[in-house]
Length: 158
Length: 114
Length: 90
Image (cartoon, rainbow over all chains, first blue to last red; front, side):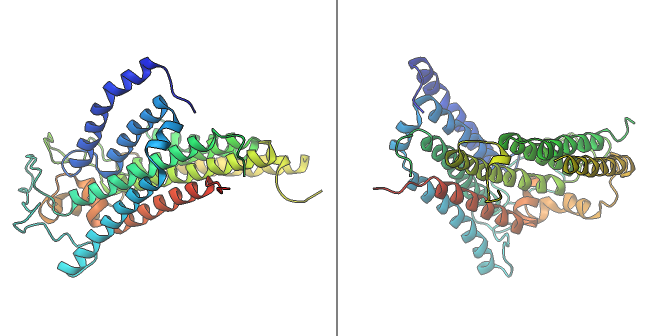
């Protein structure tokens, strides 16, 4: 599909940083407020689809090739499985949360029943949120981009 | 009949979706019916885990009180993502069927039964 | 097709009666039957996993294996869609 007029492109340029920042906020604070990897990934993918609607799918496919998107999605899935196997290496079971209680990256433990929110808590969970968020962003945007690009060319069938 | 109203709403949603799948002959309408059944099943999973007068199961700035059950909410998240994935595959198959047969009527596609 | 549509209407009404019968006889809305596992998860989620959000700790820590299965389903769906729209270069 072709792009839209100059007014739509200007408003998209203004609104897209706010959408991306809000989506990254929902992904990063998944262990404190409602949200997490899947929800924030859907928000960011909706923002990228807005770019594709405003500028046209032919222009977007030339700037972002689909093999970059599939490489990002495989990277997200690989990081998720790597974090699960590191739990097996440092503890005793698969998916062990090995960073809780230790004095390293995300290690502090909140007091039971308190309502204070510290971002330095919850062990492996924020890292898993980033891996799953990257996978969902690349996957949902790849689905929409491939389907919108394939219905443009009508003369090059099979 | 007010006391079990969410469960009656679930039954009505699945009823409407099943009607669209069985009694309609256009492929897009059948896909919309499958999506409505999916929404009804997700609503059923969420309403199984509600306690009377409870708040969301999150401790950050919570006003205190009993909390609703977190496990059905986690299973509904998985179900919504799987619904999106299945819908994407169904729609791409419908695009290929339309390019090949040039019609969307279910009675006119498929097999060699003359 | 008349016999087939009569059979469809009959089967459909049987299923509809079954659903409405179940919706009126299920446990009352707001009082679930057995809540022992979820009460354990709510009271222990801050000391065992360190997260303030009980739903995220269930999705990624107590039931992380289901999230791995869901990530596999999403990956398979994206691979299927991209494969269906690939065109052979001449």
